[in-house]
Image (cartoon, rainbow, N blue to C red):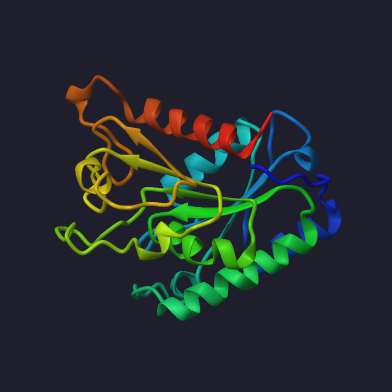
Length: 230
């Protein structure tokens, strides 16, 4: 990731912090968690931090030597309280939540710390990556535009992004397919990993010859390598 840190996690206090905030923590299993990079991974607009996709990816990344911390934005956390579905909070509140979570995690994790997320969670992280001076940014299924509107991309800030960034994207993602995205002017610090015939959840068409399992594992391996996991 380009920046050097002394890696460490204050175990007991960190475990208490995770419990108090209701977060989910997947410690790297292949090496000492204190020697591994950490990724704060935010959920997308419609699914919580413990969705199948989020849980699967967190477990895969941990298996590849990356610590993963998952949290929920206020509107999603409220769903757990009253069970009612509601839209995401306004962007300023989502960004403030990101800042609060990052500050808390940074106090406990002294090693390399990256941020990112699935879809909306990754987009919100991308808006703050430079401000927070994070070590890296990882986006899984980036929402480059609203469904059916590739001519109205939401990429202006991505042109000047300074943070080292990896975007893992399905070639047929309805919110950012390969043909459309390759026409956008993205920062040279952004690397896009294209998954053959993958959709917004990185799931490929059967005719592609690839399975969802293969794409998810390839994505996890790529992210781990990008973050410098051993």
